[in-house]
Structure formats: C-alpha cells, structure tokens
Length: 264
Ligand code: MLT
Image 1 (cartoon, rainbow, N blue to C red):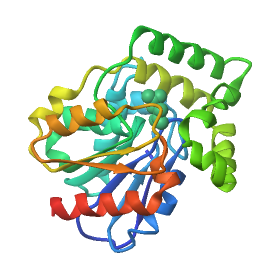
Image 2 (image 1 turned 180 degrees about the vertical axis):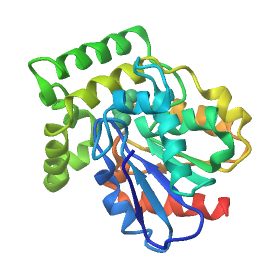
Image 3 (image 1 turned 180 degrees about the horizontal axis):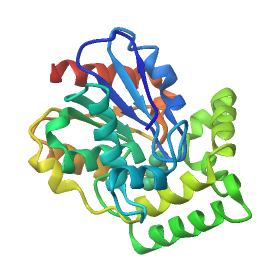
C-alpha cells in the first residue's frame, strides 16, 4: 500500500485513513497543523498510489471478494514493513470502518483509535442496494461520474454557501475517483459487519468526532461508539459536515492531537 510519512522520523505514529472515494490528499490541511507529530497516511486499496485490491488480496492471501479484511491486513502489513508495531490509528468514515477492522484483527497494533464521521453499525438493505448500484455504475459507462453527486451530501450547508474553494476541490477529487477502487470499496463497505463489540473490548483511548452537519452519520452513531469505548471522548465540530477534516482542519487537528497525547 502507498504510505507517506510527515513530520519527525521517530516517535509514536499517528496513522490517518481517508474517506471514500478520496485519498490521503484529504488530510493535507490537518497534517500541516501537526508538524511536531510523526503522521503516516495510507491510501486505501485501489485509491491514490495504492495497488489494486485484487493485487493486494493476492499478495496477502485474502479472498478476492471485496472486504475490509483485505484493507485491514494491508494496513497491518504495510505498517509492519515500515517498522511500525504500535500506532494511533484514526480514520474518517470509510477510514473509520477500516480502523475498526484493524481493531478487530490487530488490536495489539493500536495505541489509540480515532473514529471521525463514521459509525460502527451496518447498512440497512436500502443503503446496501444503493452501494451495489453505484459499484456497478462506476465500472460501467458512468465511471467516476457515479460518485459526482456526493458533493452535495459530504459538505455542510455553510461550506457550500461560503467556501467555493473547498467545494471545487472536493468536486475535483470526486471527478477523478478511480472507478475500480470505487466499485471495490462500495462492495467491501456493503459487506461490513457491526463492530460495536470490538470497541467494547478495546482498552486503548479513543476519540469519536462528528461534524454537526454530517449527513452520513448521526449523533446516535457517535454516542454509541463513545459509550462502547472504555476511555472514549466525543468531540463535535461546529460548521462541519461529513468531511470535517477538509472543512475544519484546525479543529480536527486539535482533537487528534489531544487523542495522541492521551495515547503516549
Ligand atoms: C465515506 O466518506 O467514506 C463514505 O461516506 C463512507 C460510506 O459510504 O459509508
């Protein structure tokens, strides 16, 4: 998997996992607020500079059927290869699903967990059917256009009104989303199990963060995760929608820094 490191070359790493269907560029403004922390970004299978999910599944001996297990195994192997045996792992939305999968499969890797604009629950039948429809469209005639409408839902009304630069950037990212990665990730997310019990077993500090206008995860989702954690903290980011790290990077960086300090 494609891994990039920022800041000091030693110290406990803070690993950031991006949202669907973006890549690690979404963290750039958060990372510039954390220049004293060793930050590691990873692109999901089929996104950014990472190999295709099929190549990764072959390399890891995972089933080729789309699954977050492949993503979690790839994260663990890539970090181990980079000499990382313990890290604070934080993910936004799909990145949060991946962090939960790492917590299930490799709990010893975690010094702490950050769950941003995400949820531990599964999809209902309608949401699952919608994912399969988008997955099919992405590898069909529509290609990346299958995810273009997401721009309306992932940003807060305020961002849409007052931040045309942010809207344009997210629009560009969506327009270049890789169709095979989109299709694989939608199917993998549709197949994900409920992971609340994983949080109940986790002993490390946790951050649950949600933009007040996140249309993809609810306050109930966030509170359920916070209550499940033994040492959880809930942070609500005003003015942000689903992509809180892009819309309000300074507030998100402050919350991640505070999680990081609790984990050292
Ligand atoms: C994301 O931002 O990663 C997506 O909203 C995840 C999802 O589709 O559940």
